[in-house]
Image (tube, rainbow, N blue to C red; front, side, top):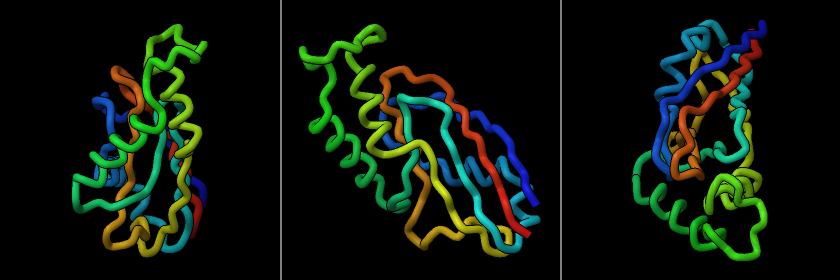
Amino acid sequence: MWIQKEIQLKPRPRGFHLISTEIIAKLPELNNVNIGLANIFIQHTSASLTINENADPTVREDFESFFNRVIPDGEQYYTHITEGDDDLPAHIKSSILGSSLTIPICSGKLKLGTWQGIYLAEHRNYGGSRTLVITLHGE
C-alpha cells in the first residue's frame, strides 16, 4: 500500500516546534498500516525537520540558541541577503538539519521512542505556513 498526501502547517514563529500531534491528526490513513514506513518531507529551503526530545521545552529553546550562535543572522560576508538578514542563515540551518525524516510504522502508529517528537525547525523570522509531503508505505 502506498499513500501520499500534502499537509499544511500553520505559520509559526522562528524556533523549534513539536509537530508530531499535528501530523498524526492529519493522517487517519496511518491506522490502516500494520507495518511500514512514513517519509515526511518539507517543501521549503528555510525550514527543516528533526527528531528530538518531546518532554522538556528547554531542549527546543537550547537548539534555537545554539543554531543562532553558530550561524548568526546578518554577517557582512553573506551575499544572499535579498530577503533579509535571516535568509542565508535559514538555508544553512535547513541544510544541516535536513528536509526529510523516515519513521517506522507499527500497528497504525509512528514508532517514535518514548521521549521523541518531530520538530519543525522554523529558521525565518516570518516563514509563513509550511507544506509537508507525507508518504506512507506498508501493509
